Length: 89
Image (tube, rainbow, N blue to C red; front, side, top):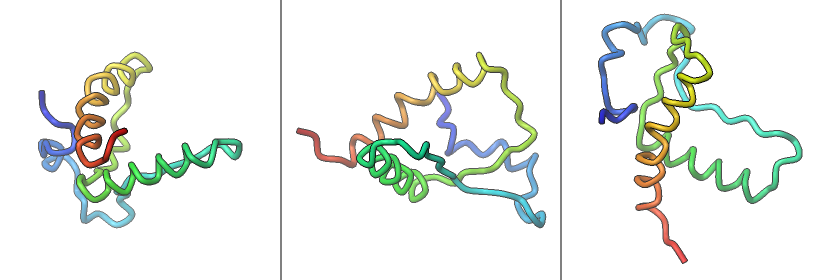
């Protein structure tokens, strides 16, 4: 399986030098989210930002089932990679 953040096929279709082009990873939290969950998510985001470049592909439209499939395909791979950087009880 291709790793979603290390493949570079998208580079030929997106001009990253275009003014106003967005990149990055953004987080949003519900105001009632548990503080430990918020902290852990922020820590995970720091890891992701350090390890990967996030291209912002506005033209990419996925159906709800497409979003679910994409998340399912990559979630275990990314989480396993992140787990290798942490101590476990």
